[in-house]
Length: 92
Image (cartoon, rainbow, N blue to C red; front, side, top):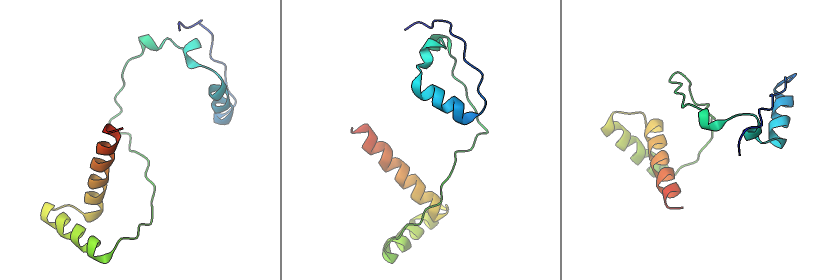
């Protein structure tokens, strides 16, 4: 679909803009074929703290593995989760 060169309206706030884009197709306003990939190296992903209950033996094994790799066990847990999530998503 080619853009119709419609102008993007001015919004009073983010909520108004969000409501607009929920009901409008951006391709009517933007020629995505002219888009360029942008790398933002300094942006940090937003994090969410969770509480996770693990069997003590599993936690001790995780800490042992982390110690052998010289990384914090929380970081190793994130690595393991990321690898498994990617593996599962590829199999879909």
